[in-house]
Amino acid sequence: MTLNPTRPPRHPNGVLDVSTTPAALQPTAPRSDWWSPEVGAGLLSAVLGVGAVLLFGALGWPGGPYDCAEHGTCFCEAPRAGWIRQPVNTWTNLAPIALALVVGARGAWWKKERARRGQPSRALDLLGLLFPATLAFQGWGSMFFHASLKGWGHAIDALSMFAIAGLLAGTNLLRLGLVTPQKLIGGWIGVMALGLLVGLSSSDAVSALVFALFLTILGTEVRAASRGLTVDSRFFRLGLGFHVTGIAVWFLSLVEGQPLCAPDSWLQGHGLWHLTAGLAIAGFTEHAQRNVDQARRG
Image 1 (cartoon, helix red, strand yellow):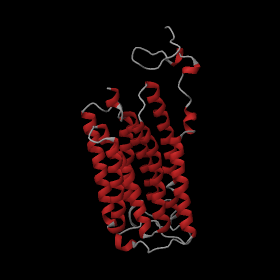
Image 2 (image 1 turned 90 degrees about the vertical axis):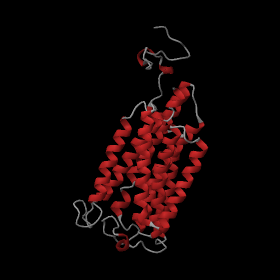
Image 3 (image 1 turned 180 degrees about the horizontal axis):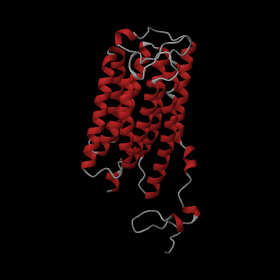
Image 4 (image 1 turned 60 degrees about the vertical axis):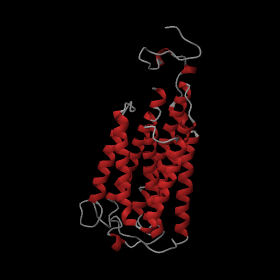
């Protein structure tokens, strides 16, 4: 096989032939992706968000309490004295924050892959920044509620869930050609505004509306696959498995008396939900990065 000094050699099926590729032309080692704007976006979101949680905790969490009895649950863990009212349910949100950095590193890799193919895209590069920042927001947004048990903390938690679910749904609409990148961002901002409004005014409706967004993600994914816009569904199926597992854990740990609810324990089922939710979103974002520009390549 003759080497082209400007383009790495490939097998007939299009896969990069690393065995005969000069070192200078081989893919960059994955660790270099950790030093990237995408990882920086997730890290900045995490630092600002967790910093704000600690600041408001130091100020004594001003504002009215969230009425656990009125709303049916505060997700099992018994409130404790101090800055962090539910420490297990609060600190387990470090899992999605850590996963956000992994998502950022993957976003950096996909950006380099598009550049290598000669198909750069500012819109997809923007998604590569938004995915890790928003997943980190999911983590520290939930922290606000569990650390404070305040009504406005619950609204921030709702906002973070609408943010990540809305971004994933919008990405699928982009894949289907139903929205432009500009309309995706506009619609995403609108979904977040709705989430904040619902969180402040009708918190009991939050779970139902987030579930509706999840059904939108699932329905648009099925449609994209039927149109041949999905080249690899492994990570979507992996994310779906984590999500379904997480939903089961969520229900089984909701209130005292259920199998995974022990209010005074340092092992909380709802904390496991935070981990499974983070893993599900990480799987969904990897799936989106792998498939979002399939139409451009086709």
